[in-house]
Length: 297
Ligand code: G1P
Image 1 (spheres, helix red, strand yellow):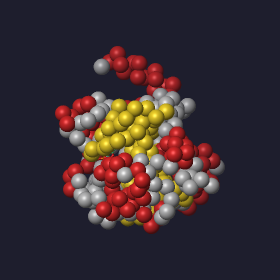
Image 2 (cartoon, protein in one colour):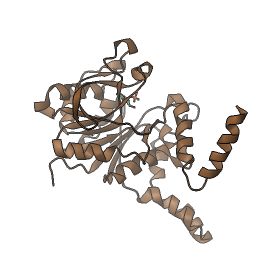
Image 3 (cartoon, protein in one colour):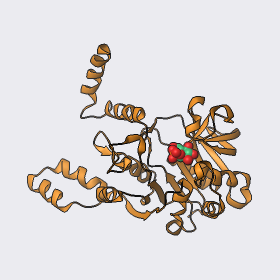
């Protein structure tokens, strides 16, 4: 097995979800449903379909709902079984059987870098994938698999990048890149977390997918709080990019597919519609209704 073969995924889900209050007052934002599945299930499914069965969630408050979603619900299962409702039973069981899910609690919310550090004991000496629970990549546009292959063949840290409108770059980590290594892959030479538009060195944003070497933990331990007084993963990656001998360099895969920031209200609605129009059960009716609705507004 290659030294850089990845088998584990880490998903931080400790955010407060303030942009969705009051819906997220008593429920983690990752449990908001896109049609009939919570956002977190799409993210876990993405990890699993890229071959990562071992999933560690770094949780915060309200973790119970998340844990319950991926656990058995004996009563509900027995009830559906009795009724012979096998379709629904399969849906209920799908999240239970999906992956081997582990949980660790973040404690103080001291930033994404701090959340990632909580995975150190579980990950130990291996490379791992990091998927941010807010970002849903359309399953029709595979990204993680390409990132894992790139990591395996180069041994470098790999991050996903996407061109955004310059007015939006202040919401993201921003990458400075050099040329194109191969098709859609760039070398990252520098990174800055959430720069002001007028100071941003590019419009290439980090989107929530990373494949990281374990050396990132040592770097994170030495990384001083950055933007917002939080330990920033972007700052640790900047150290990795500038010290390739220590932690491997950083490559970026430029994603041109469909990505939904489900932490954003408008994007959440767009994600729902984009996914729903292609669903077998409701897609056709929804398309027709959307045409009618379009004439109304
Ligand atoms: C985090 C990262 C940022 C990245 C973004 C992607 O920010 O710190 O570098 O661009 O995720 O969604 P957050 O959205 O958690 O504020």
